Amino acid sequence: MAVNFFYFLVFPGLLFLGVAGAFLSWFDRKVTAMVQFRKGPPVLQPFYDFFKLLLVKETILPKYGSPVIFLLAPVFAVFGATMAGVFILLPLFNITTGFRGDLLVIFYLLTIPSFSYILGSLASGNPLASVGSSREMKLILSYELTFMLVLAAVIMKCGRQFDLYSIIAAQQASSPFAASVSGVLLFIVAIFCIQAKLALVPFDMAEAETEINHGVFIEYSGAAYALIRLAKYIMLLVLPSLVAALLLGGFRLDGIHVLWSLVKVIGIVLLLTLIRNTNPRLRIKQAVNFFLVWMNLLVVIAIVLIALGY
Amino acid sequence: MGFKSHCFKKSLWVFHFGGASCNNCDIEILDCLAPRHDLERFGILLVGSIRHADVLLVNGSINKRDRERLLELYNQAPKPILVVAIGACGCTGGIFAEGITFAGPVDKIIPVDAYVPGCPPKPEAIIAGIVKLVNKN
Image 1 (tube, each protein chain N blue to C red):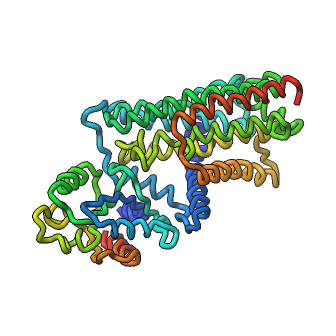
Image 2 (tube, helix red, strand yellow):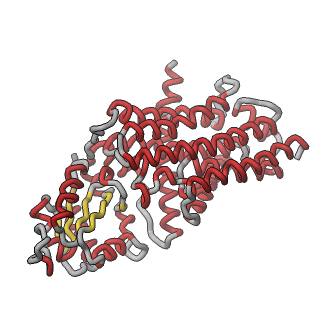
């Protein structure tokens, strides 16, 4: 029992995820600044932002909405992101939980942050927030099927194993899945899926700053917004680690391999940042089309290739 | 208290309200955020929603219609909020001070923490104003 609380709150859980995710968020902003020939913020900037919102600013509740759901939504978002992070990072750090079938639980837990943003923004009673949440809903409908198919393809590739621990073990016994034709296709699709899950630029229509003023987050201020930032930091660590576990062979924690594991996560974040800095925002119709037609087509090709043994 | 105010100083998020402006001050404000001066070095970000803002930048002459919007924005902002009046029009009214639709300089409507005069002020002047604002608090 105590060890479970330790897992959730300290080591692969809330504290570790928050701190590591904040550094990745700084990395993302720094790379963005370097792409634009700027200097960028200092290393501790995400912590300053978080503590300023948490401790200094006032939290304003909506007058024409539901304040309870408005305040609970960020808590749910942090909970879902942390829970998913614990389930993903435990097998990655070579701690077995004995839980078979955790991939399905991870899939559901990873959707909780997006759904709670929708709940919170609809409870705020702001018209721009409801535009944002409608877009977020359409985006979820388009990318979740693709993400599910990626997971199904990975499960098929490693011989119908449903838990992350044996998927990683299968890759470390032979070679990473991304070192095959079908694996490369799956990697491309997975990168776009997590780009949409993180709401980074080609798919940030739900919180378009220049268009609907942060959309789903428009009414959040103070501590509630701090929790949303925390959930975003955590997701920025969790989703790249999931891709590293599913397709790049997971982490190895002996000697120089620690560095190589770090390079995997940071490399995926770098890729996401470069995609976000070189693309304009899509319209929601284009995003739905992109996932439902083209990305699904790629996954289906990958599944056929896996069935043929490539 | 030291930790709180340190975090606040290091991460000022700016909301930009342009009154009936000639757009010169707007361009100079955007110039501060562009690569040459890059205020993100100090944690200053431009945000789109007043609920996220720590600093309310006001420029341009405030006429009777802008007055209501400005008051509404100030009341909707989460406290503590700092207000900065930028440009001659924001500080004193400039050449519009005697106009019939003019509704007073910014400090007659809401309390102002820093003034950056100039028509338009140079980006260096805006940065100097922000440094003084940060050191005051």
